[in-house]
Length: 248
Image 1: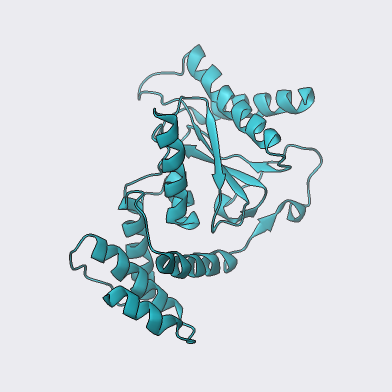
Image 2: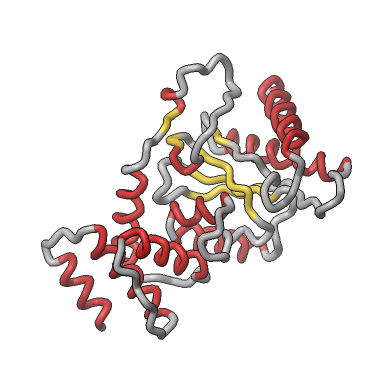
């Protein structure tokens, strides 16, 4: 009842500011845990706390009011970033372009997320992996949709395969999630590992083509915590994408 009262107060014809949005979202998520949480006084601290609470939250149902406030906050955060569209990349001389920057600022048809086999995002608060960053920027609906997909599938996602979801509060239209091979420290990728990494790129391209998408932004799959050597991974990605484009 307290939460509903706060919402009505916020939305009774009064436009709430960013700090009020953060306070509401944090209180809502902390109430789910039925515990008191020390809320920082500064905006940046509140943003970090909100992201942490979103990161650890399982894919449970949530109120429409929460989603309304969350979406307004996250959309405003996205719009305040320096967004880049395909047309903004002026040095395009072919279909394959190298771009350096924050993948969550790209206004393309789909971005690719390097996911884990559960496909539910990263549950480590404020972790800097791309899986965490994409889910934090998109909003909690992304984890909910991934959970529906995985519940229907009934098993973990296979390495080298991919799934597509909406992008929610990201500037892209969709997110394609793919699971790359994990290389144990101190070892080199096997032939099978290389084939599975290539399969990640091919699977994403096939999924994008099947859904009629015209632009796709890949991250460097498996080169972070999954420990695939960067140079070798880059060569596999370029070769695979060029081969697909030549054949399709």
